[in-house]
Length: 319
Image (cartoon, rainbow, N blue to C red; front, side, top):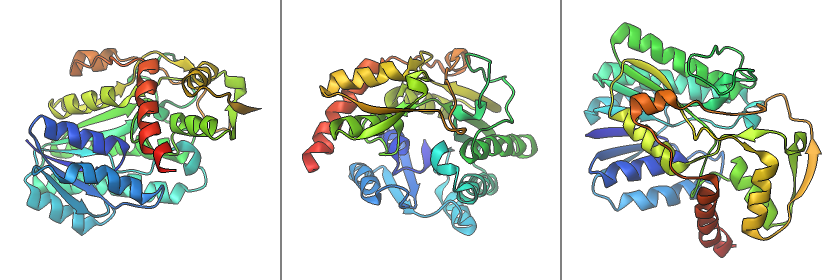
């Protein structure tokens, strides 16, 4: 199989590319190495892929319409895994136009390029945040959307809707994966799990919203990758599918887990949650199990132990 992975230098993208090549696929990576966080981290992610003869890299921006058409036309791809995006609800609050440009315009560019090149299958990274502040727990894929709390999930809803339009009009198989609180080695510094570890290690104070009475469905990177690859392997028309663990963890308990792991006390302040924050994320993974044979296996304690091992060797050793 010949696969185009956008955002391949990022956290999820680099793990997905490595997993694809491990099973013998040819991967073309695409990334613009923007400075939303240190591009050197992204270069390091890609450096681990470059030694594989089945990997090719394009340094390009998904907003470049003609560039995306050229890459897709030349690649003869069996599928696209579209991970390139501006992420994070909090940062999106003050940067709505940027998120719309990259996440909506960029996604439409990729869909159009795939259509013109005859690429039959498109896997799209969406987010658990599309569910917004809902009383329907756990989150099911047939829950109503349309009330996002920030520009980031709004752009992901737009991507899902555009995917449906391209499926309806042109027959492209489109699978939107709603990813829940992913974490693990090579994570972004702005991710909540990374930020909490980093603050506790360096004895910096950080806010614990609502006194820690918020919940996140932490899902380890290897489980997310298994779901992404399963989605690539199955053309199912149009589908939206949750990828989570299905076991939300109270934030105060998560902080205590990190304290025990790091062997330091957290210094926190209690603040009300900002309007962009969802009180709970909780995935119903029945559909993922049925359609993708998706079965998350890594507990939060085990996953954070893996993250801590990476953090000590790759981050602390370099300080």
